[in-house]
Image (cartoon, rainbow, N blue to C red):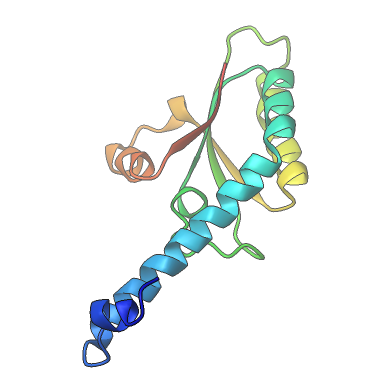
Length: 136
């Protein structure tokens, strides 16, 4: 980095700009934390998705955006679509996957079936941050 670059971009007389910069760095760090957790556990996630016949698994909310994600306390929010005729009962499919994800990621998991979302405002909110983790 060039000498004085930081001072030229974020002068001391502009604390609002400096705070905005720090906020953006913090958000990127938080986003990187959950993404690194997902990448670290990618093989396990894919095995779970195959076991529970998942067609699509997406992460959303603070776990996807990094916004207000606390790596020590935050849960992970997932949206799931199951393949038809999995051989498991719907309860085994859903709660089995939810429990297995929580154990693998070592944190609480909220799991929502995509077809269960009827409220367009909730769907829009989810769509703002959702990212695909697995697709069959």
